[in-house]
Length: 378
Image 1: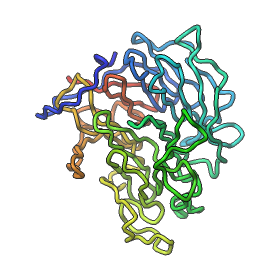
Image 2 (image 1 turned 120 degrees about the horizontal axis):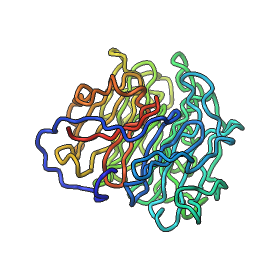
Image 3 (image 1 turned 45 degrees about the horizontal axis):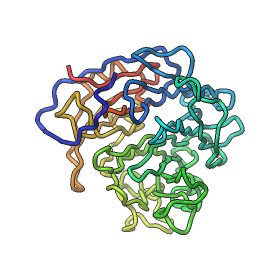
Image 4 (image 1 turned 90 degrees about the vertical axis):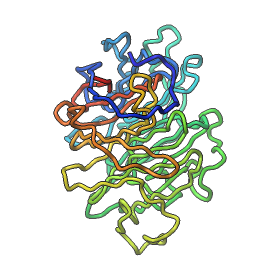
């Protein structure tokens, strides 16, 4: 389905060829994410907001879900409701241990990180009974939940949590962005092998799982499979959408919210001032003047189908379905360039909910309208 299963780290350069979106599945219900097992690109797993994980095997969407926890998941009840089953990550040794992790809103108004296991008798099904819970925190307003899960190159599980909600007239009403004692507005880092012991290297003096802070809603982030750098799409409020890029292993960074947004000062009356050297500005910030309004972080391409695309980071916007690419190297990013016309993304996608990456490094786009596409050369 996706490629040879081998990640390619060479970057031959050259002109990126004409690209297209190839549909790999349709008929999904509010899909939010797609991924594969760490060692098998032929099997894709799609997270549906209502509480199911669907399996695409042999190029076919299976009728029975891989996991159905919809009875426990608080799904969406109105347009733009951000609650639901939001994140999925497979353990790096999933092939042998069958462990995977999900992040979601419960019907009891909490956000939870839980572990499940593959069924011992059927690899196309998961055991519906969870095996562990790593944390449970109250849902505040209901939006800005975050939702991304990803294992880093250090073997730790990283979790994106939003600031708990608010509106544009009152950004971050509880000041969670700058409060390291809470899990909200953070990227957390958990050692799933030794929980509840926090891994060394997290931010000191606050919640033991905080890795980075100062986010509004880090909806989707990813690690470059070759360099290990962390790319974070942080959904903006009134002004700017952000892409933050963190060199491998550096962490403990403050990305500014809600003191700053996109490098612009919002509130200069907090303990951390707008010009504080402790704030790390975004690598990319774009405004809403052209209708954009909700960044969807993506991936650095490391597949085999499009060699000229290797090393380039793709990301997009949920509101307009536009797609861009850039290259970040030695702390410098090239200006973003558009792939929207080439991919015909604005006329094909109905809400760019997420990108996805399979075990072979090939990239996918999740359309909230119910379809999954792979990015292919023409």
